[in-house]
Image (cartoon, rainbow, N blue to C red; front, side):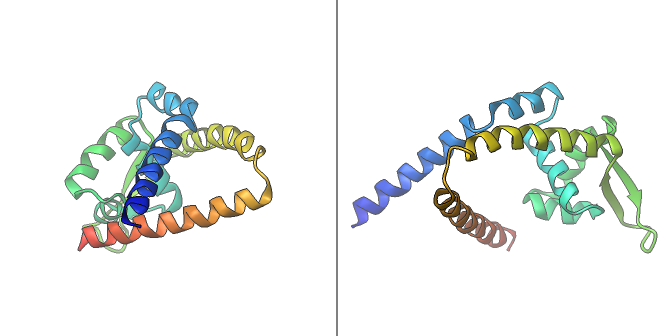
Length: 152
């Protein structure tokens, strides 16, 4: 039983790695073409979902140190993709938000990814898509659990 479980996990790691590398190469090339790193794209994605996060909140969502977020956001600010605003109710807090340019870049990145994934999902029947949704939900919950433990 232990050997089968180990083989299944190894196969899961391999398939996930293969999926990440092959599922959407055009979008990764587009990120590189825009001079964006994976972490910078994660910042854009996070701010798209939760606009106005302070550095500490953003660092927590990304599971990195606040000083790391500052360096990442500095470049996004220089590229006019993210803006920093002083919080009106607490002047010590700086909030981060996508600029119009940042929101446009994010929409373009998401659109390209969705076009390709739409073509991929069209090759699957409803039952297969349902199983994928359930598996991804379980995987996401496990990732969140580990991230929560790591944050302490």
